View (cartoon, rainbow over the protein chains, first blue to last red):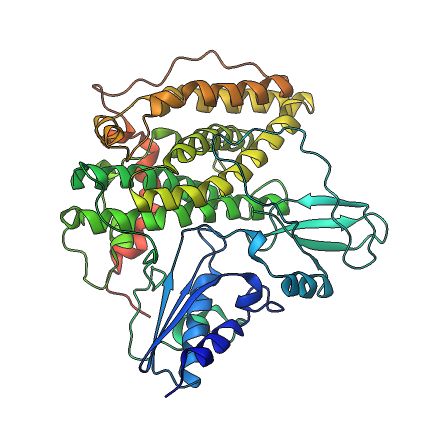
Length: 166
Length: 309
């Protein structure tokens, strides 16, 4: 009978549908894997509330786990605690940079209470993943998916994506 | 799995399972969050409160989606769609929670395979929607609105909802607290986006300034309603479930004043849009725009309610 180690390994290795260079483990969205008999229960967390990739992730998890010998697969969604880009692993950050996507900074714990308005946010240094130059500008805060911003490198003139901190 | 074709991802891997055509096909089960009813909270009140918070988000998501392909620049199409998607994502677990705590609130006659969240979104009539009127009015892209008015609304709405959800992170309802904690991070980005556009338009050309002034004047009459506490909100605030919206006013005002001052804009001097017989959006009394909005949003699901993938 396949065990929880196998189920975990399979679930961890499922690629993220929107950032396929990352696995679910790299992205930090896999919360829990349990196995009872032939039944695997996997808990994942959405990156953003409305992230449409969650549905695809759920289907992929079911398909991969069935192939691995778990006829019954349940995928649960956990909204709490809320996902943060801090949960992207070091390996994940390296893979993002290699794929030409600037990884997010680590934000650390955030204070409770009202969120202060910052009309002049401090200048961010996001290095160009192609040439390494720190001279990059943000083109749009909202990119092709909820988690990415669009930037351009003023040194090599190439546009690139940045996984923005949340 | 293939992602080149959206229909493949919808139809494969579901076996004999049928999926209602207009929903996502999965319920957000909110694993790891306790589902008990908070002590002292009336289930019908909690149902109504979840609808208030969910309807604000759903209706504005619908309005923002209308801009897709019609915004002034391509990046803005993407930005407004992203913001709408975040709000839609906030609405979903709120509707699921509403259906869970008070099943009697589910609209009658909706096919069984339709999840609660979709039943509440697609099969309620106008008077059962409890959103504030700010989110429903036409701020464009149709002839009645303008991009600047959409930005003005987004600035007001996101500043208000951010203040509201910040307080709800400590709600005694575990689902509301989880939705709020997630939403706060998203709304901070929405407010930044609206604030930056307000600066750019207000402090831009003569034409952009004029239009931003007009945009603010369009939405400002709906501002007062955001801070009027409904009896449901007051009762639930006593049990620590809800936040009293009247307590948010000074915080929101301070944010708005900061943005307007920097953008070289004045607070519009306009009369608030009065409630009708003491009733407004939270009571299901809406403006003329609401019926048209719902007609477009609900038409297909209502005309083919049995459709499945």
